Image (cartoon, rainbow, N blue to C red):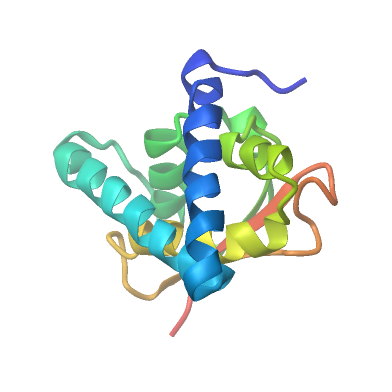
Length: 161
C-alpha cells in the first residue's frame, strides 16, 4: 500500500492549480510549450533546493547511485520500498516508482495524460538535477509503463558517453 505523506498530499491542490494555469496558457501557445514553461519553474525550484542542501547531502557510490539517491531519497524523501530497483549496473539503474505522486493525482483530476505531462514538464527537472552529479548522466522513463496505465512508473538513470 502506498503511504500518503501529508506534505505530498498538500501539493495536489497546488499542482492542480499550476496545471489549470498551464491549460489556460496552452490556449495561447500550445500544450507542450506551456508545459515546458512549467518545467522551467519546477527546475528552478529544484536547483534552488540543491544549492541550499548540496553541502549536507550524504551521497555514496557511483555517479549513477548518487544521482538516484539525490533525486529519490534526498529531494523526494522516498523510502527504498517505494522505488524498488529492478536492474542495477555500474552505469545504469532502473527502478519502479510506486510512491504517492502529487503530479499524478493532479493530472488525473484534470483528465490529462501522464505520458504528455510527465514527458514535457517533469522529465527535464530530473535531468537538470542529476547533471549536478555528472553531466553525462541521462534520465529516461518508460512511457508505456507509467501510471495510471501501469501500476508503477518505470524510470532509468544511465551514464552515457
